[in-house]
Length: 273
Image 1 (tube, rainbow, N blue to C red):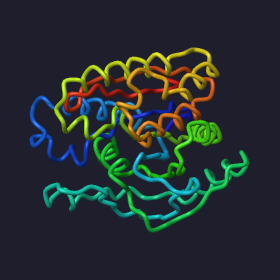
Image 2: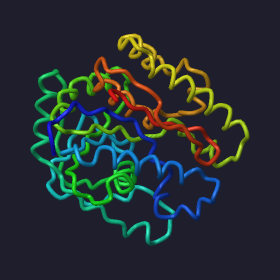
Image 3: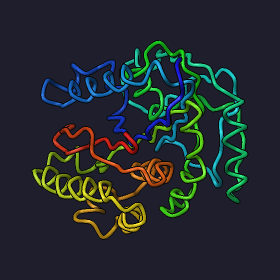
Image 4: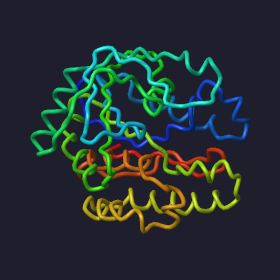
C-alpha cells in the first residue's frame, strides 16, 4: 500500500436480507443488479488503499456505543424465512482489536463512553455489503454499534470523534437503507415510489450542502423532510448516515448511487471523495 491518503466515508444501502446470494428470487426488476455493480466498483476503487474497515450497521444497537474486540468474528444471521443456504454463508475477515482499542480511545477523548464485546458475529447489515465489495475477506473489520434511542446528534458526535481514523487507512462505512419501511415495500403500494423519491431527493440535497454546519443542521432535522416517517417509521436504517456525516468533518458529501429496490428509491452517499 502506497502513501496513505485521507479516505472518504460512506453511507451504503445493504438491501434486503441475503439478496446477494438469491437475486433470482427477487426477480429481474428488483434493482439488485445495479446495487451489486455499485458495491463491486466501490471495493475495486478502495481495495488497494484500505488497511481496515470500521463498520456501523443498522442491525446492531446497544445502550452505549459498543465495539467488537474479537480477533475472529463469526456470523450472526439476523434474518428469517430464507433458504437454508442463506444460513451457511461465511465471511472470514479477521477482526482488529488494535483498531477497536484505537476507536475506543478516540471516543473516550471526545467524552463518549463505550463498551466492548467479543461474541457477536457480523450481522447481515455488515456481511452482505462486505461480501459484495470485498469478497476476499482479507481486510480486518471492526463493528461499532448504534446507541439505543437513535439520537441523531449523538451519532454525529460519535462520527466526529472517529474522523482521525480516515487518515490512518481505515474506511468508515455506515450501512443502512435510505428507505426502510417493510410494510410499505410488502404492500406493493404505488405510493412507495413517490414517497421514497421525495425523501431521497431531500436527503441528497441535504448531504450536498457545502457548509458542514448547515449540512449537520439539516440532517438533524430529518423528520421534517418530505415523507420522512413514511420512509423511516423507525430510524435505525438512517442513523448510520449521521455517523458517516460526522466522520466527514468539513468534507463535502454527495449522492453517489441512486437506484430502485423493490419499487423504492434508495441511495448511497459519500463524503470526502
